[in-house]
Length: 140
Image (cartoon, rainbow, N blue to C red; front, side, top):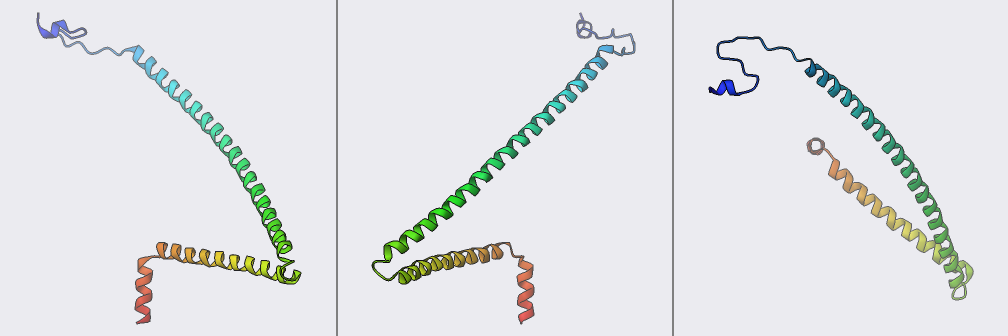
């Protein structure tokens, strides 16, 4: 037997029969398109649910951060009052207040200086090199 004759659906060597259009192929394509639409609808629904859950989680996390910052503020206030009370017998009450407020202001100044330095570092990192060259040319 010849190789062509053994293959199913193969035409005989002398016949030139046109290929027939298979109706099941269009049914398969229609089913594939329908499955794609179903998948797309399910994926969109899933992503909406996921976004809604993420939004709720972000809201809860933000509320927890706000409460934590309020409690931290109260704790620092209690620490400052406690330091004033503890220092009052060693120095006068006004001296204790001055020491505590001065120390807190020094801490605030130190944190502000660190913030300024970090801001300058970020500015230098993201500055355009062309801008620096232009400013060097202007000063010459």
